[in-house]
Image (cartoon, rainbow, N blue to C red; front, side, top):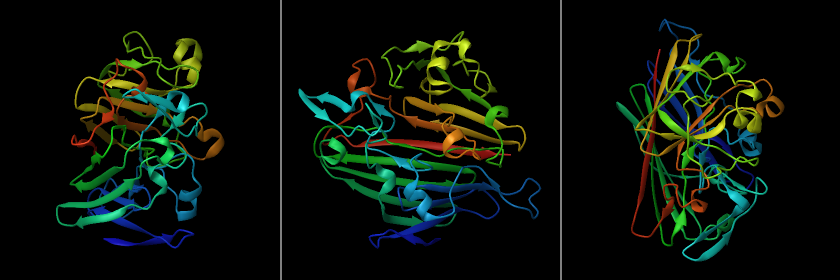
Length: 337
């Protein structure tokens, strides 16, 4: 079901689509940036009561327009950071908008989340879906090439899936991800410390003082970054590791060992979420900035992605998309109680 959600100042209409079923997982998607407006499960007993909200969200369109925390948005052209807002490709230097000075963050000054995407299709039945499309013109935020992107968002049973496809007419770096803030306790006022996280990753990417990878691919063994067995997402003290002291928490990319990326579990609600992807990395962000921006909110981002700043590191998997070589990636979030 698709209905109106509001209008932009230029008159463009923003719609919202509801995916899923009343007796299972439901998700709401805005055509503004493919934003994940809500994800809910039925109450535990299945009889009456409110559905369990699993992501942070706003009630009004204006809040999404003014938000600078990328709440629920599709992210591109390049999710995460590019160091110095610049990269070299095929012998040519490109300068990007430095919206996270001195770096480019999540695609630059105006990322994918601030555009109204075109509805290319939708469907009901057991596998409800919404297909969105967007053209990112050459030179936007400094990136080369016209980039055409589709995002197929679907709910089948209790699994939410995002499948990206992209093509370009000139070589360009891409890193397409999604930016929900999960709060599996069902109450955004609950701190995330009690939630337990597992990440199927033997290595992670240390960062410098501006939160850009140094280029090292470091083992997690013996560090606070070892989530190969379930443990609390509570941030350890700064003395526990130089990287924790540097970022005051978790804002790092883990190097995944396989397609099952992570599992998050909230004991208070009994909700469990399993993340799968064909992308090589998983950014985990504990939303520490919410203490000043949204002090009543607590959440955690689990973002399947290419490696941050890959265009500037020859030892990272390539993020360059070239003409005639379509990009295809997916991420899925399976929920259970």
